[in-house]
Image (tube, helix red, strand yellow):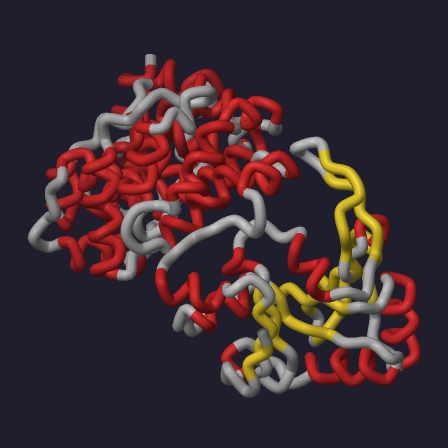
Length: 413
């Protein structure tokens, strides 16, 4: 169960100040360990991007006392549920007291605190997520998570049906971790339990489903995993089967090749390639944030073509009218949906990331100063001048533009 000095703890600990928290807990008679994601990811050979979650056998109140005694600030972010925020180098680390489930309803759990690490491990979802590590790099593996990780076997702890019934979101989490760490076909017992309990997904809030789906879409084998999910009816309650999985895989491979930034909204769009009306429905159905919804719908409305990006002199114009984020995601969506990589892709990406975006040099006061005082015309005049300026490569200079104001005024009538 315990493996001495099994990992290089400095792959997890980038800030030496974290050791102060370990000493504070130890001085108070407790034990502190990293748990879940950071430990799992280091074991899997990942080098960065860890979310640090910690567990302790102290109660929340005892942990707060231990921190106060050592002048470490805490934030009450979830004491009722056993989680205390600890401020280390201006960053909040979440430390959760060991727990056992008392009652579950498929969405939430009532818990009580315990000092038994094995009991805490038993309430976690997957064997690969029930692995702990102390500050010396000793690893505590209660359910053969290390072996499963090495084999690429994603399994539930104990009875799969029971684990899923405790929180139906674990169905989606199973597939997400399978897409990251799985090798070969999914574990038969786990897959069967997911299928048998899929109706439980209807009891979850759409926000929880959306967040998990967005994480899944960013995984290395999202297309393959989604195919398995569609074939087994996992997603039938909240989204139709996608015919664009091959296009999603094309983008995933390209993103890995060029280390491209990944946007879950863009990948959501690729799944259905919706028109404006359907995009509005999907964005509302999944309760996208305002920013996500605007991007999603704009991807649907825009009639830009891949060739528009292949003309490098045109990219600054696109950046001016649409901004960097939209241009990047529209480009990636077009590449995926056409399954075509532009020959100058790296140069296009460089332009999108680095080109200066000019600022239109005129405003209403300039038009007034030029002698045009009809307020009804000023807005249209500015729009016409701006269009001329952009189409001419952000020329001419403001003085020349103002010379055209009279002509623009006529067009605005």
